[in-house]
Length: 268
Image 1 (spheres, helix red, strand yellow):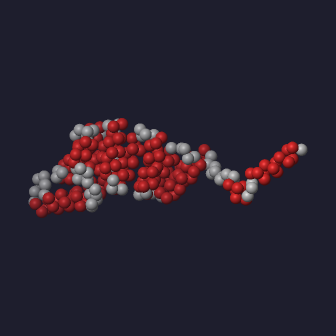
Image 2 (cartoon, rainbow, N blue to C red):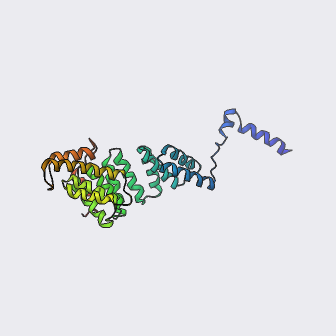
Image 3 (cartoon, rainbow, N blue to C red):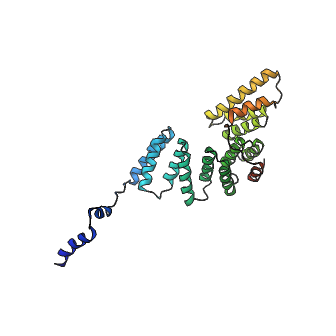
């Protein structure tokens, strides 16, 4: 008898109004089984690889909605957002990942790359330094630091970072390409072209490397045609043409003293 009256009484107490009843309803959580997640990840990876970034990001978000504490889908989403050019959101996710994996140098470096992309070179520099403190032999970080130094008008410092990285992996195509451009920015054009051509022979050559070779080859050919010799050139107009071709206009600069403190891992 008690049970008969108790249930209606509890209903009256809890649901004093329709809105109160609704407030007790739980939002349905998306169900993503392990098998389904595996298939979704495969589709997202193919979408990302074929530059269908919006599709990839949507799938990664759906996985995270179902499993918000999983780190790998968050990494995949952050990388996708970065490749989409959605740097602010990528930065947000990279920071979330680092809260759980503070020593992950790849994520630290990518956070630095994101800061570099939104014209915050001082924050990018801080992240590259942080990554190199953890692993001073990380050639990707050394290379990206070199890129940052070049576009902030510190090519001589950048050369040291590339030289350090090449001591670790001398046949890396991207390193040779980046070092080639850095040499060109310091007026060492023929040597620069040699490194760019060396990078072209690598297994992972890409359109960016080919484009860099073409830019420098055309400029160097034009200069030699004008001067009628093959000597190393330091002509100011040649340098300015190169700067205009490879360095973003009006990119913020970094102070010399800040740069000097940042390249302790670049021994040259």
